[in-house]
Amino acid sequence: MVAWGLQVFDSLDSTNEEIRRQAEAGAAEGLAVLAKQQTAGRGRRGRAWDSPPGNLFLSLLLRPKASPAEAATLSFLTAVALLEALDLAAVPAKLTCKWPNDVLVNGAKIAGILLESRTGPDGALGWVTVGIGVNLAWHPSETPYPVTSLAAHGIGVTPEDFAQWLLARYGYWYGRWQAEGFAPVRAAWLARAQGLGQPVVVRLPDTELQGRFVALDDSGALLLELPDGRRQTVTAGDVFPVG
Ligand code: BTN
Image (cartoon, rainbow, N blue to C red; front, side, top):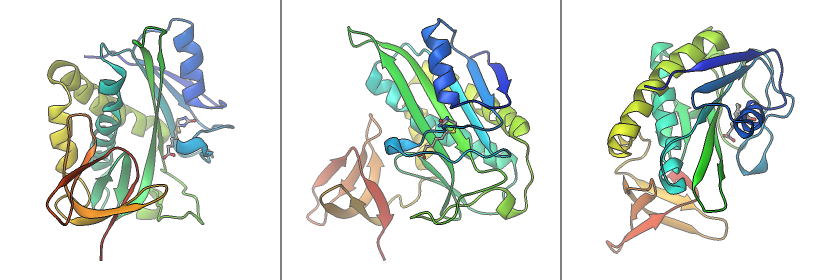
């Protein structure tokens, strides 16, 4: 079981950046960094992540004995741990996960996950930082997709309390992932996946695919059953329900 060592900062540029600094200086697996606000929070695809006080900004340092491809499945583990931490907050709404790594409350995004890693010149994994942002007190407006927060559901939780719930659920799932691999995490993720078994459209940068979302493969890629019955593996894209 990973032993978490939590450091709390009033303000940081980015908790992922602080983990990177400490990882490069030799920090051990289990370092967890919580910032009350971020001045340069990072989102996926080079986007900024608004980081005002009251929300959760947490990053974890992991040094798994795994290949970079295996470590990529940690994003699904993170979504499962987040769903279970949100269960502890007793959110009176439906909690689901959306491929590849969104966590939704009644279909609206409440959390973001950003994995960053360092591989050595031999291609071996050095470290992974798992960055997690949760809209506890505030959520942005004017986003291209629906977003929400715990406060919008009438729930008040401090970042410190939520971090403790999340670290506990993360520790449990990370232990299973180390001992048993991706399979149990994949099953837990699929049990709460939005759109499983349903017709979906996958938007790719220059095209889109329609089919039925039937499973995840061993690497976490989405398996789509096309109208002609063939199966297509999807490794990137945005998934939306059809109809
Ligand atoms: C996304 O775009 O959905 C991912 C957002 C990830 C934000 C978190 S907040 C804590 C950690 N530090 C960062 O700079 N980013 C991640």
